[in-house]
Image (cartoon, rainbow, N blue to C red; front, side):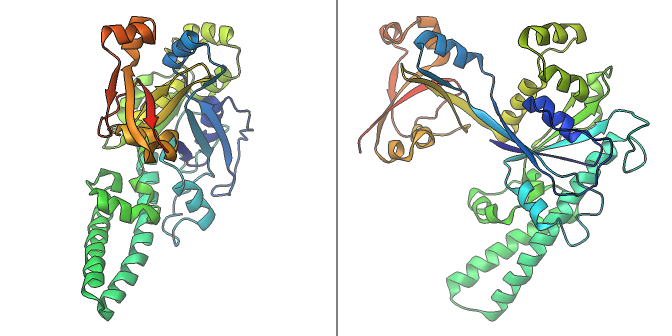
Length: 362
């Protein structure tokens, strides 16, 4: 799972990046907007289920799911209008499964806001518009080419396909002109495939992170309305970044002192999984206990493919047991006695927390 961190200059993007990744990237008080500067880091997804399974099997190796974060150069008002986002910046943003928009919600007279004042609702809308303007430029360029090719004629099947694409692009353009992000449209799976190469930014799920003061009330997030495939969370960025550098015992005391229920990493990952509609299943054994990430609704054969393409190709059956059933039984042998261990076919829909072993033949 790849998540790109974006935001206006002086929003505290890098502070949030450090909080999520235990990073120590410098956060200067002044920066140049739009400058191409990218920081990347991978973090393990905290999961108590993996811990319990590892304690049960005592494997040689324990592997958690991972999230890859990318702290991307600051955006600025007007970037989407002046010919679209620059190639390298657009490329860095488009490679992510979702975008995490850091919005400044803290006051600091020593750090000037590029818009002259702190207004989270305004900044959320400003960045959304920049993403939509960039998409409009991409779609318009493609529409011009499609219309030209339709005008030239050709084989009936090719012209029909081009007209269908034109109708889809016209629909997207109409939504953007109405200031509706493309993530809010209901797009058919076959059309989704067509759009994958377009790098449309407003189509990506969005997690809005309000970067607040240390003493802020987290209910400030309620001031930003949730919309389809967009979630809002408030984080005390500077405080959370300090927390990320502490030893576990000290961090626990710190959390209790400031009334923080859980570290920002866990909260952000939870919302990211929700936005991207993904879940975890597990494989277990003496060699390795491992968490795998798959889309909600994925079939057993798709889960097999997440492990290795050979398993999907030679799929025979999936041995499946729910995490709670295994923990309740205490062992796989006991689970078999209780009848909670079962064989499933290709079409079985894997559930969050399922423990899966694939039977296959090469």
